[in-house]
Length: 258
Length: 196
Image (tube, rainbow over all chains, first blue to last red; front, side, top):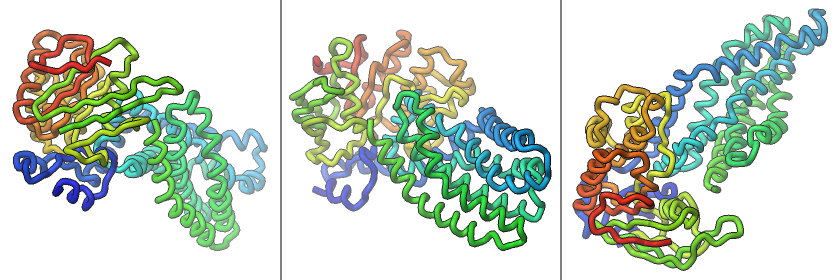
């Protein structure tokens, strides 16, 4: 009886590999403490592993950054080099190219772990599935979103964005890429195992990212016109705080389906 | 004590198995045998909680809330090619909440100490399997009672199979249970067999 009471007291994921503790099983109770996975610890272990993997394979990060800069560089060729037209286009072009670049590595977010069997290890680690998704989203933002933000000044310069709007551009891209990391994690979990899931993923995620483009571009435009960008950034932040709990929960539910 | 009651599994529209019941007491081992596609791997995934049974339930010490303390080793080795053997095992230890000092002992248990600093991509398939099996040695014997193993000895040499046998024996002596799907003879004494 004590075993089932103990279980109820501590809610957790399915099949958390925790030794059953019962009065008749003192030996296991003694060794149990060592093997009880703490979700926070598993979360940090997963995050640290993904960051370390990204350091070992910097190509994905570099490819996303190069893609972002190249797409931004294509606009002047397309619309002509007239500075005022470019500056008019810059906010939307920045947001669109950054979100497209951030989509690139999403396809492998869960795919690599599913292929080599690591995903089973994660699912059985006692970390709730939403926690797995949150760690993945955070790792995606750190390895893709942050480098994109670092490259933003280059893209801003190529699009002739007024320097007064660069601060707003950095803030808008930081929020928009975080928003996309969360949405994209849910999309990646949903399309995991689907044939050609990599093609489905942008179709699923990009329409949902439209609010981020609208408010992000509006913030940059406002700053360029000498107005305060903060109302738009706050709306973007509101979207992010909505996605922060919802997207990992949706991704976690999708990961449970085999 | 593990009880499987009247388990059934569907894959698509096909019944893989149905009406499957068995019990496993501490210290026991169960071999799952049967032709390819008989549902051995499916049963292991179902017991691990990675799949939901279409019918029936799995009871652990009489409770059916799916909270079974277990280690699962699937077909894939779950190794990251870019990480060294020690790093791969260190991640598994941190994920499971096992102190990092156990990594060296686990490597030694499968005779991987000389390969500890090699990236997993440089290991042969048998060595990768040994590294995956070394995860079982991270916990003390019997600390995580249920081991679910899918073809654990694929690609292993005779000496490694012997080492695995020692790992199994210590685990079972401490009250652990082993369920393994296999086509090859496994180093498990007095194992029961479940033919699917």
